[in-house]
Image (tube, rainbow, N blue to C red; front, side, top):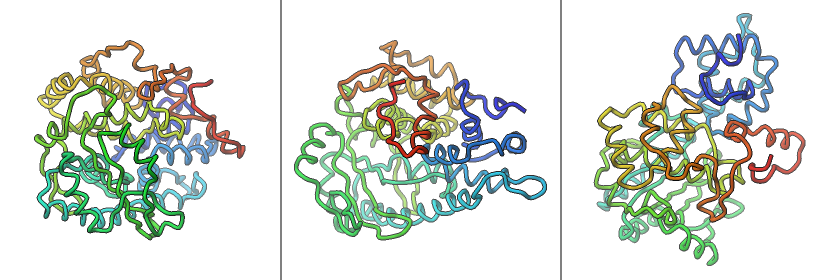
Length: 392
């Protein structure tokens, strides 16, 4: 059985470890998918660079999901009981540890949601928390981090009053992780000038082994201030829908707006120098979030998505996200949907650094950037991680 039988991605010649990773990147695996993966591992598992596989699963944010699939379906076990992958326990612990971590985050963030509800604030929860419970349906599969809250700018004082009463402060965590240190004036100024769609995050030391810090990230808009798109929180809060998060009644973005939010965030992070330099510009988790959300849209909602994207003028971001999601998960993104969003700039897919005011063209392919083997080789050699990956 050839490597290509594992996935239908359009990424071309990628390492076998990457093909395995993509095949495992599903909340649910069909019996046929399990069979293909197990057959591949039976034939090729001993030749894989399991260190590279583990590194990529971690960097792409899907180690708990991958670990759960490998262990639950016994995919790394041969018929005679031998285990193909070294350190089987890592995959089990990754899932179970993430489940416990998310439960701890949920217990804390439930208190925040109760406080916001009692204060009568109009807000909506974004991204991770609503995706983890509402899309993945298993609290251990997807890592959570910040609690992202969309609210009106004039609601910030009341928001701050509620969360400060729960022990949150603006600042960064001290070296011993026991207190929050206020941001210096330069950081505050840079944030105010460059990120006027949000405010500095609020932190609370967790003092736990599984959670270092609880983070609340309030924002007033889904678009970056230098995007030129005119929108405010009201444009999204008006259509927010009721849901339950961490056992508490709350609100989330409308499904169509969730797609827009994920696409815009994906485009920004994939093309911004800061994310590129730290290796978090492209991750499978972001594309998986998007395709799982897309699966849930009705034909009527897909039409509404097209209308709403054109109304905001954010077609470039949606086109970018859909195009590359279709490279990773081609069966989950309809070509006719991508065609709805013709980019104003024909070079859209190959340019990065625009929001930084330093536009450059990629010299590496998308697949090479997604699975950066140079970074792994550099780590193994104990050398410095390479700089911006536009350089071949």
